[in-house]
Length: 227
Image (cartoon, rainbow, N blue to C red; front, top):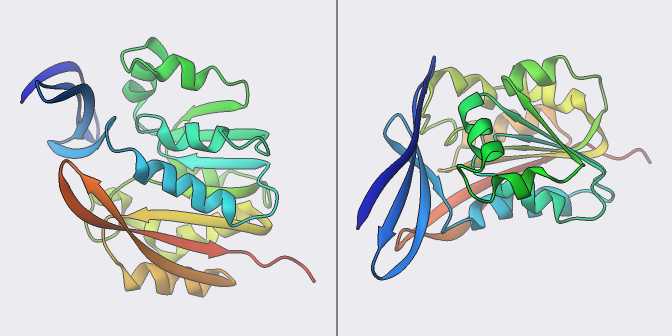
């Protein structure tokens, strides 16, 4: 296996590296690492797509969707595959990552971002949602870090705690849903969601990651629809 760095950037949160993974046994792929930690690649994208599918299936008419975390664009792309979606706002704190997709450093980036329903905001998703009018979104999808127990950035701990979950609920319409991806089971997160939302559940799902079986978790919380 050969790795070639395609792009590198630093920010107040550390180092982002986009590298190409080359193998004689398979196709060339891209891999994103943050502070030396593997985040995602272009081979196994089921995680990002499952996050989108779960959120879209949880509501009756997902017209407006917010995605926290651009990554390599696959959650956003899956959201846009649903014709019911009229607007998809993506919040990404790392400007370099947005630039890499826009410029084609991530080859599929320009195509993914060309959809007129997309709005990309460079910023902190917690701040963006705090400033969001009440009852704006039908679905909020969060894949910003690895979950409350395997954080890449310690400052993201607040995204899994009740004050932020309360802000997310306020931004959702009646009947709306919040879905949070986590690398591991978290009873604390589930309890926090149950305290702020009308219903909450956590579901494990299997994924094959770089040749090994993994279990990841999706936490789904709903705002009840009026009778």
